[in-house]
Amino acid sequence: MNAALALLVRDVKLAWREGGAIGVALGFYLVVVAITPFGLGPDLNLLARVAPGMLWVALLLAALLSADRIFHNDYEDGTLDVLITGPLPLPVLAAIKSLAHWITTGVPLALLAPVLGLLLNLPLDAMPLLVLAMLAGTPAVSFIAAIGASLTLGLRRSGLLLALLVLPLYVPVLIFGVSTVSAAMVGPGSPWPPFLMLCALSLASIVLAPLAAAAALRTALR
Amino acid sequence: MQPPFTVSLEARDIACERGGRTLFEGLDFALKPGEALLVSGPNGAGKTSLLRQLAGLLPLETGQLSAPGAEPDMAVAELCHYVGHLNAVKSTLTVRENLAFWADFLADGKVDAALAAFGLGPLADISAGLLSAGQKRKLALSRLFAAPRPIWLLDEPSVSLDAASVKRLDAAIRDHLKAGGIAIVSTHVPLKTRFAKQLTLGLEHAA
Image (cartoon, rainbow over the protein chains, first blue to last red):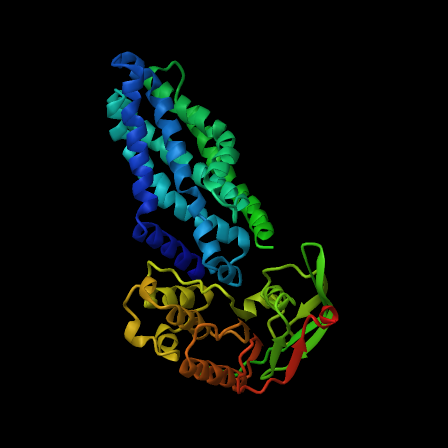
């Protein structure tokens, strides 16, 4: 337990110190959402209608920017070799590193989303559910990103390949994430069924993705 | 003072294959507490691969490893300290933070003793990114003292160390052996440590 906590604290500290991870993701999110109205024009009703989808798509892309850091830095400087000789089983190791990615990327992006929602004329009463849906859905984003990060470990320019591998896996998160927010805005149904599906997706990824990531790590280390 | 280590290491019929080429096969050795093994051989003979296999980073092609004297559910890798070619040093953390992480992660170790082991105490609070190559190497080797583990796997540990530090490393290995530890070292630099066993890889290909 102590080892797990030490690893989590170190990963969060590294992401904070190296700056790039959190700052670039937030900046990218801001820029993508800010230029959307320029592309779509000043029609406020149209902007409000596309806002949930836009916010979710931009969030997925922003989260992927730092996804290759989940394992890559530790692989490059030899830390991963030593981590593996530690007391934690490999899937637990992968889970903790994914959790650190969620804390340093998923949570800040979800908290920034309502501010960006203002830029897209998202109704104010949909904001709480937007943040809630994003907090519930981003664990799936981080844990699935870890699969891509471990599969592309050791490849050069792995970021693009990672996005190609992982983005299709985000389709369910996107669908249920957007329908939660849309239902809160315009109905007709209740937003809770898609929200619960989102929670289920996150829980399933938290359990299953580290197993897949661990298997991919084993192969990458050969 | 911690109790002496009582773990032995036995390797039976180990083989290693890299990229379809067999590096070595049928390797046997057994080390009792306090014994050291010197692994030598030409470049590409499989010294690093053998150490990585012992650390659980590479799968064994055949054969098996066992550690009599350890708790039965402990993997051999968990008894090992692996110091490879890469230093596993985080340049954005300070020297102390680097060691403190390994002390917490690998076991409930002691940071101050580890800092003193290679004389890094005065550098404790500077960022590890500012260290020279030799100092980074010393930081990687200090990890050996951050958490007590019976088996040391050292792959070319003296690279970029100055003469005084090599002597210090040499003495550290001897102290470890005296405490009942096991050291498996691959090096091209002569050390004063008395190696109980020697293993030369790559002879079958040398001819």
